[in-house]
Length: 464
Image (cartoon, rainbow, N blue to C red; front, side, top):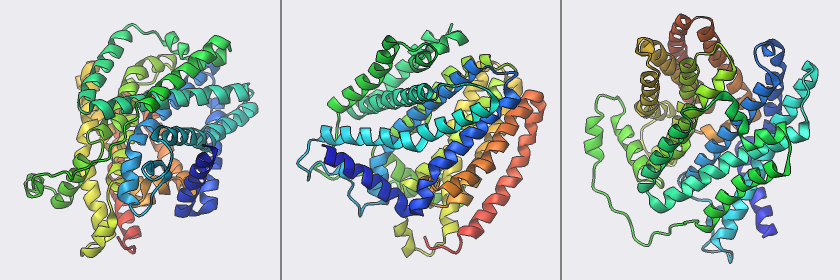
């Protein structure tokens, strides 16, 4: 058991360091610490409009959502490894050859991931934030904050792990279950007050530490995780799957796009790969649904911010993760036999990305309708489209066809944050000054086009 865990930890390090070197990966937590320290130092400016309790509220829900997104990405992990690294055989996927049960392997894998993200994100973020707080005069209990942020992260992680287990057993029926859960949450939270958010067990434990709250936090982590481990489902198909030839039909319907054949391939890869629609549900729609439920209440503690502006900006940033799906689920070695360049492949992925953006755009439109602000529809849609274009253009320029792994490089991630952070915060700030200033987002469109052109030039010298 311990030897398996050690091997998985070594495997994780070697896999990431092989992409951008030991130093690039080792310095990544330092970047997280530096960013969180700057965030803490910004309280010098915003300390008059936001209290220390409200900062704690935002931090704990930030890590709760982060845990949800990491848990959702866990659904994609096996597919990514099978498609992008088919020549490799990770320990987590060797239960047929190792004299160890699937539950033991999965348990070690989950513990390894939790420790991995603790040292990669939680510890650096808490250290940087606490260090910045000392300089601003705000006082935080470092060890208590470290524990409670970690608990928030694990609660979100275990929740989505449980949902993914339900999906593995019920398949498409699970989508109905998730819809019922969403309706139940909307019903439960219809009269929710902003003060109720402080009842989050991990946050409540920080504010008033007690054994009962600690037990509650551990139960919210352990119970869903144990259920997921007990009912783990690993399929080993004994027969080949057969599909009707629909490539030409799909490509014909997408003929108005310049890369319709590539888009048809992306669609078939996506729909026939493991998880299918579950990828959208768990890695995008679940975090967006949680954001939709909680954001109105969370913003009540920060007066002046326009909820639709914040929602459009955040969803626009989250939409860029769909570009990650498109490049992670493709084996680019097969393109080397075709008369294509890297810019050709990038353009095809961007065409697919633009089509997939119908999903987050629909979410934004529903939000505007639900808020009863039809008169602001143009402003919000423009803001979403502009932010989505800008973030994906920066992503393409910095990472090309290796998005997820390249972003773990300290230098690349720092550049990514510096290029995106001030812009999205600026959009939110302009919306706070005057809603009409949101129209300035149109300036991001030509900037995005320019960045994409530079990205095509940058990556044109590489082989697919």
